Amino acid sequence: MTTAHEAAVPAPTQPPTPRPPNTAGLRAAGGTVGAATALLDDYRGGEARFFASPTRTLLTHGVERPVPHGPRPLPERVAETLREAGAAGAAAPVVVGAVPFDQTAPSALTVPAGVRWAPPLAKDPLVALEAAAPATTGWEVRPVPEPEVYGASVAEAVRRMARGDFSKVVLARTLELSSARGLDLPAMLQRLARRDPGGYTFAMPTGAPAGPDGRPGCDRTLIGASPELLVSRRGGRFVANPLAGSTPRSSDLAEDVRRAAALLDSAKDLAEHAMVVDDVRRSLEPYCRSIDVPRRPTLVRTAAMWHLSTTVTGELTDPENTSALELACALHPTPAVCGTPTATAREVIAELEPFERGFFTGVVGWGDANGDGEWVVTIRCAEAEENRLRLYAGAGAVAASSPEAETAETGAKFRTFLHAVGADL
Image (cartoon, rainbow, N blue to C red; front, side, top):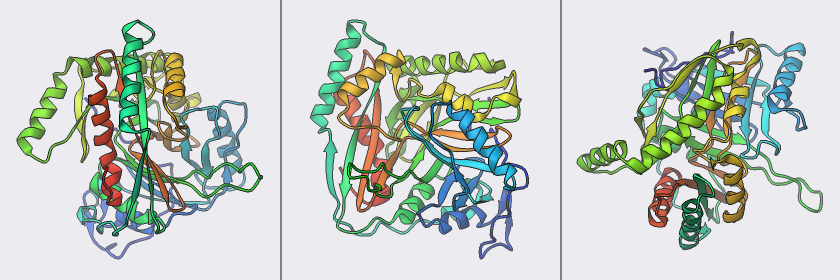
């Protein structure tokens, strides 16, 4: 079975040559030593966009043209923006950025003025060098909602599922971190990327809406390290890699293996995972000439979590008119981040979550004018603004869920970002 990490989606043809790092003279399997980490080192925030996956690393600068908001479907607006950029002289234009949980809300997608490409971080030996330790910062941490309130929301959802209202809902909670010091986004990105170089690391400006007085909102950046590929496309073939069902890692090897084996044998988690995979298959089948869905899941690990994983592959019926982003929009939101039935789960989320998700559980990635691209589920992330961070974590509640277990799962998922900033719950 092809894994998400093996399913390569090539960069658009004739990408700009990456600027050689200091180690440009060295060679290694997979590319020049230091090419990928050079892009990581060169990220400075602002309008720069960084995205690293198991197939490539990219860093952009400037804005050629943003994708406009409007009533037409997002893939149509993106395709038109790419055509306009190409007609204006852009060589191999790409769109990079993020789509919110609510697809009708404004996206943060743009055709950048320039893109530098490199091989995957995981194939750059220099990524094994540890990032600098987080600066000593007195973080003030405020949970929203409080863990007890979150647990009560899970209990309410389980009660409604027991009477047959719906099958699953993903409920999230947040941690609001504030510091007297400014945020060091490049340092955070370094720690996220070097801790899980085989995953999907990103930093994307998302802006902020104007305030009631009409003044522009503050700069905002979406930053994180997701383990989950929503969908990628290369020519006529696609890969989707839904994750659902999780357990925290352990620093003790024997216990870590025991937890992984227990997850593979958990009736509750396997049922939750099957629900997500079935939805992915149903969403993609209308676009497919063929589709392959393995019978049983495997495991994906990050530094903090084990996840049940299924790699879905297939061949498109009409690849010329079916972009990676169109597939992503057809899939989004999956039951892995929303629930099922989708409409009911959305209503429950709106009722029980005391905050707006924004770009959390949305989609982040890139696409080119040929329709190829990689789009990732926006989890294990935070939104950064001035001296504040809002961290997000969610857990899938099904009829067999317990408030204590789901609260503990979200706490474990927070560890990815808390480690990056040197904070604790």
